[in-house]
Length: 102
Image (cartoon, rainbow, N blue to C red; front, side):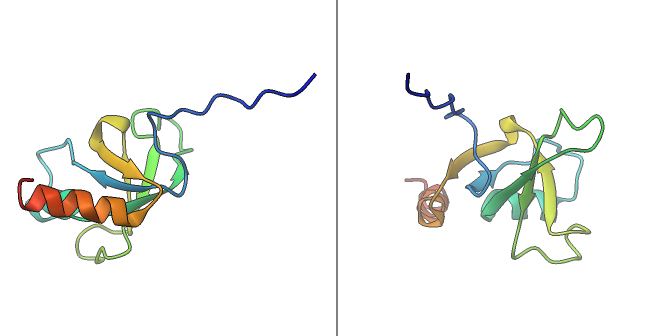
């Protein structure tokens, strides 16, 4: 009997995927909120801290400055991830379309 491949969650990003997020917290710094919605991040690992089920995704932003947030990573939940892809170019196309309202 052949082994069946386990079901992959196709509606969630996988580790290594590029993502575009929208910060759900409107009480944060406007520069941070704007940076997150206009830049591409990468899902690098699952959040394993206790009580982390609310924000299970750790997103890495290569272009983030230390002044923006203390590390180059940000915790996000699935509702905050508005687009994801294995290819960075797809995310760049999405951002360009968003910028020009296409």
